[in-house]
Amino acid sequence: MAEVFVVAGAANKLTYEMLTMARGLGEVSAVVLGAPGTADAIADKLSEYGAAKIYVGEDDALDAYLVAPKAEVLAALIGQHRPAAVLLPSTQEGKEIAARVAVSLDNGLLTDVVGLEADGTATQSIFAGGIVVKSQVTRGVPLVTVKPNSLTPEPAPAAGERVAVEVAVSDAAKLVTVSDRVTEAKGDRPELTEASVVVSGGRGVGSAEQFSVVEEFADLLGGAVGASRAATDAGFYPHKFQVGQTGSTVSPQLYVAAGISGAIQHRAGMQTSKTIVAVNKDDGAPIFEIADFGVVGDLFKVLPQAGEEIKKRRA
Amino acid sequence: MKIVVLVKQVPDSGLERHLSSDFTVDRASASNVISELDENAIEAAMALADAGQADEVTVLTVGPDHAVETIRKALSMGPDKAVHVQDDAIAGSCAVTTSAVLAAALGTLEYDLVLCATESTDGAVGGMAQMLGARLGVAAMTGARKLTVDGQKLTVERQTEDGHETLTASTPAVVSVWDSMNTPRYPSLKGIMAAKRKPVTTLSLSDLGLAPDTVGAAGATSKVVQAEPRPPRSAGQRITDEGEGGVALAEYLASQKFV
Image 1: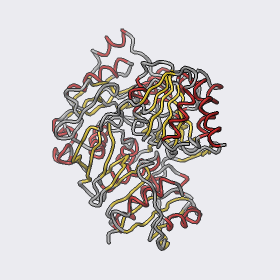
Image 2: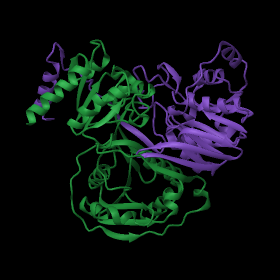
Image 3: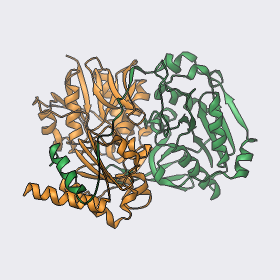
Image 4: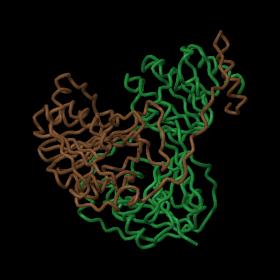
């Protein structure tokens, strides 16, 4: 049976989604590239979700320089094993590794993929979710970056046999040094792009302090907090939580838009959400055109009242 | 320092966008504009020029004849000149082959720094800076929210999924930027008038030494085989809060099993 690579950087939901998706194409081999110790931390989970083999390439150089060393090692591994496809996370790093490998192997690359058929045909959502396309790679080993929340991960325990990979990094891959890496405390909330519930605030929230209303509602539903570009540009909420064309694209089970008008720039980042709820004072706000449930009203009254009612129902 | 800024003409993301019958982006009937983040790349270049750190800024684009509108728009923000790679055989190129065309065009230019957007608003692959870095054998620094130039030393600060990081490299380099980096200037009337007279060099594939069948639809590494408009979302239930809106919202969420 053909081998399928899944490039796994962390034990997280997106990795499990990729491992689940890859099973449809062949036998799954995870590829772990990073500093020494990276594989130890995640190998059990990779086996649990179906990795028959785990290729492990560990070297400090893989984290000390930006993506090029990882791309070099991955390209060499693809050359040796010629997998049926290579799945990578559709994250900043995953897309950049894929881009370099695509050039060095003259291979096709498909990004932000949400579905993959046995023959390698990939489903993507383009133009702000307005068109669904199916694409195929026509040259080389298909490189596919997978978007979070594309499917429900299913465990399928496999052997997870570890195979050491030699790491030889050329000087050409050491041109960009990562001189400082800061992990910002993210608290207890789920990752924005992985959360099954996202509650976002927009210009209508009015200030950074008042974003607590959005945060409290998100916490009540166990969701992540997002913000529209208007809100991040105004400094109400940090830029990294921006949902939209120039921010994150999210596709949760439930998306709550509070005080967001719903400009195309924002809709581009959230309109593939399963259920959309909008609260806005302006009954002409375009967000209502795509909302499954809309409340025309003051978010500072509606959200706290809904929160109280939810607590009552849980009591 | 000499800077080249990459720009791309794209269908306006604020309007309805379509694919042509061959599943390529319909650029002919669309209302075309400069890809939004490209303006941040131009602004970054002009800020360096204003600070006396750049003595030449060149705009480079690959696109059909009408991409010249985007070149003029870019030049109106201040760059000195432009290069337009135009060849009918390029139509239908994938990102991988487009990067080969751009790399060949950059090979004809002098540059210390190439600035571009982290991604375009149409294809949104987000890989061009790394593809060019790999092809040209130069540093590729991506997703910059801040760029500092000190002689040949470049420092980029960028946001990551779980925090931020600092990247360092030496010129020559490709640096891609996000909109968090700056606020693009509005072209002045003087800038718009001056842009009409700035030199624009047009290059064909043969000027770049590229065979037509290695690019475009013929040379693409991937193809779209089917495209369907997503069924439009229709508005669902809407209520107006008259004191019980929050309760109604909670009831709806409970009915959908979110509570």
